[in-house]
Length: 497
Image (cartoon, rainbow, N blue to C red; front, side, top):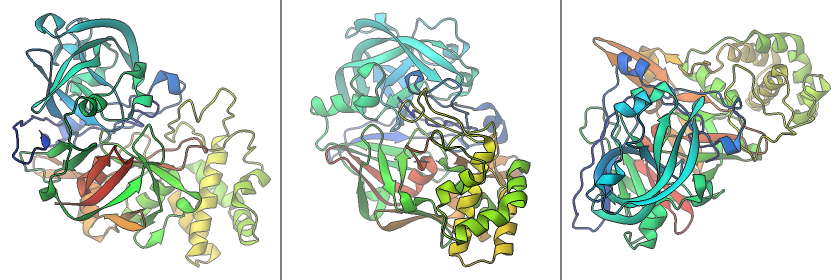
């Protein structure tokens, strides 16, 4: 699954869902989603960690984040008669998995619905074992085959994973039972045909598309809707802007730019990408840019004295090198802080890094943390120079950025009273602006009469050959109604209503 759950979950907004199923007159296949309200207690308890395929990265190559948003899920049935399960409809993975009745030694299985093959007349045994790494551990099980019911659709002979061992305590906080992956087959564990593919093959969808609307009204009973085979026009205004898939496997697209207020972040001049992932709650991006965002919106971060030391020791030299036209990628090499024997986008114990087998080989060489910070400082100097700032102002600004690095535990606190003064963060996609207002990217957590606010951006650094990379999760999808067009390998966005 490669990046599956590519950085998963930063203090999950615990949520519940129910599936409202009926046969609408317009012929579209709908799944309605609900969510629970978020409070401090559920925020602390609910931690769903990243799921990453062991085949695609080293075990210590990922540091986990906790997502702070609502997690949307709906109800499906497996078997004949259908056994009901709450699942996340996840565009970032490709497999369907639920707990098995044979899962008897894991505490997480006790509180979740379990599939019982003996109760289904359409069950077919496969028995091939499978292992899906999740968090710092893994879930284990085996493949089976049965009918799957989604709304009024019956998908015949669908292969899925019965999980028999859930290796991490985060399952205790899950308000859903499993995952229904809507990604591509080439990232499917065991090369299993995804549910979505079988929907098309068995003629359940008039068009090879599905569309997603996530309700940003926390008081609403219906938290969202996924429509298979069509589009529900009442959930957006204007036309969709469509962009092609840049890498089949993920729903991945190219970004033109990321802007903080009206200023470019300086990230995408050489190209950058984004994975559209309904299984993620927040928005993840390169630490260098998230730090700039944290500074602009006043989010609390951590202070790196290594970063500050580089500014104080090498700041004047970095500024001089760049203004004299020395190529930015060799500045830190000339300073002796980077070797560039391998790719240079690496992590230290503070910076979240997500890699897979295409980006982190056995021959890869990890640079020192000083190299990582130096690279960020070079980028920050470039951005500030484009704004025609003087050297003293530039170095002072960068010193402040060294105090706003994304928090290692993934929580960036915001002053709730300052939300109205925060700048918009804009993603340029297909030559069109898709801004997020502060109300859309700040998360409010209610506890009695008090409110705590968090920034919705987390750090993600990938191997240079794969990045820069963003993961646009539910915060972005809540603002923009999204069409996943499998037939034409493209994604469309329109303003959600």
